[in-house]
Image (cartoon, rainbow, N blue to C red; front, side):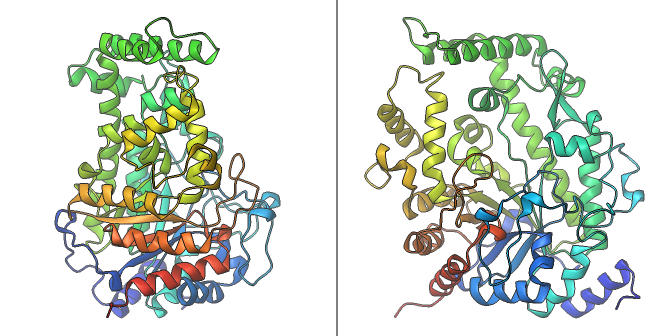
Length: 505
């Protein structure tokens, strides 16, 4: 086996698996899976397989958690591999403190020929790191097939310091603020970034036996970026400006409006009152006076969808059976009203086979409290916390009788939140694409990635899985990361999946 190159290995696995290149049902007609055929994925970093042993890890996932498809991260550009020992789940093997380790940033081998149309390059193989030289997808392919499982990859759009540090020429692809200064995230209209993204998935799917991909960008649009993160107005690079002009949008008016809105929000954060008409009216007035702001927001979301369409088309030309999915984070799907308005689930069905939307029920409580406290510094400045929570529940369609009261938010949400959000997604997709619920297990509290252990309530976790299927989910994705997930929680998920597949009566 070790004498086979990647293409020979892929051909061999295709013959064994039977028809990797057979005709697939298009995304527009993707059927909803029966519960007993449900997809059960899990977010898992490459190093977890080597820390625990590939066979041990895969057997644990299949036997205890009913996993059908490990969703492996071949890149660590988004900087998630930093969890301290206290945040790690016990899987029956010694735990490692990842905050003190040097691990590869890229776990696959790329071919230069795919990147001829872009100056961007993935990080070169590192020699001075643990597990240097390991090719995780190639090493996982046969063990996963032997167990009747599928091999999926999970890729998040890179950005920030890790992208700038490891991806060559990253500065050629980033957004620009209203003054023309570079930002950290890639511009969705930038041809370098688009070509690099397409080249990446083409290289992966032509040279590895991958069954599916979950791709996503964890960031809000321009308005949400300013409102929730105090981000700079974006993006005003030449490509975004040209796009706007082509759509009949005046980029200078958009720039003026964005700067005024950003300045208004900044003044409110400094404790200045919103005036006699109130802060929300002041916010809406700027949107009305500068309709180009909303037009700019819409174009950002359309460009994001176009990137997903490019990914979908590139992969389907290589492997029609591959499952191509879009990841929607909790901030995007459950918090940001501008994201929900600008990127409706129904539109996503045209370029993906499934939408994986995050519904981390327990951590949603503390996150929601933080979100409300953030917007109360600006557009909800006049509302007390309780009224702000009431408004959030009303706008998002949550029944306050079934959701936590203000004093109970730190304790988290329960299964009814999961049911509500999953049903909203499934109803919007109307069977044209599948809904996978991202179920959160044992997500630590605290800033950043969290350092305070928070074991999941097993009854709530069991019912969250069951209620996701009741709401129309065709599968679940065990989240946030395998290394956080405790073995008892994984067993609860496996039991819930198997119970959901068992006919009543």
